[in-house]
Image (cartoon, rainbow, N blue to C red; front, side, top):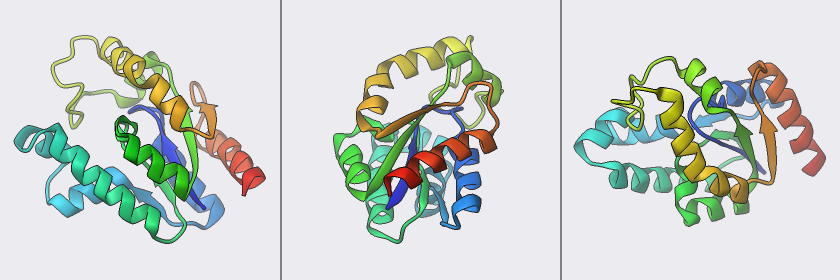
Length: 170
């Protein structure tokens, strides 16, 4: 059973995913990184040159391939839940855990909009993040088998809680 981590940017999906990989011995897969490798450009470049829809198409294809492969800890892009087919793929392929974070904490963790196409040009990053999160909150919740708060917690602490939940269900 795969362990899919979903949530907004800055929620800790990558750091928690790496920690979970270390704790469980499962490989770690970052969907955004795989998309970048497949397309030969960064997420920002894809958004700028091909558009968000092209990125979402590639993201869906990679997610489907990963879900069909060997069991792994998978950090999904923040917008993976925007497509119902992605939610179905994740829920069929394993457990989905929503890593919750406040907009203020996410903005603090991210630090800069560099490399984050949805934040470029934002005067107030926490405000922009709050808007994005508000639009996606029900999608994250609807996709998830479990939710874990990440505010004020180290990746190790979050990973411990996620691992406990995952082991109790597998």
